[in-house]
Amino acid sequence: MTLKVDEIQNTSGGPVTLTDQYASKSWVAWNGTGTATITGSFNYSTLTDNGTGTYTLTLTNSMSNANYALTTDQHAATGGSLENYNRTNGGAKTSSVWSRGTGYTATLADLSDVMGVTHGDLA
Image (cartoon, rainbow, N blue to C red; front, top):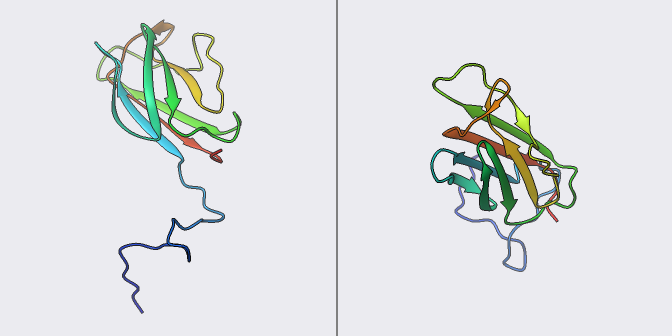
């Protein structure tokens, strides 16, 4: 049997509430070189460039608390070993904001291909 639909709604005509679903609640990709710019995202409102290799990202819709899972990655074509600088620059992870550092071993640097994904409960 095949079920083909264009849209599923609840009985009131609104969005369906999914239970026991653990899909990503947000994702973001950004270019940190020059003027830092979000290149693609879901549920992100702003990217703040705090200086060389340090950024703060703000969610459009907050998580229910700061205990969500955050996965980040960075890529660079050259420059040596990449270093993970999560929550750098004294940035605390809150329900709506987190900070990220990028760079090479022991050196912060602006990179052109950085990304993050969050999993948890939205507020």
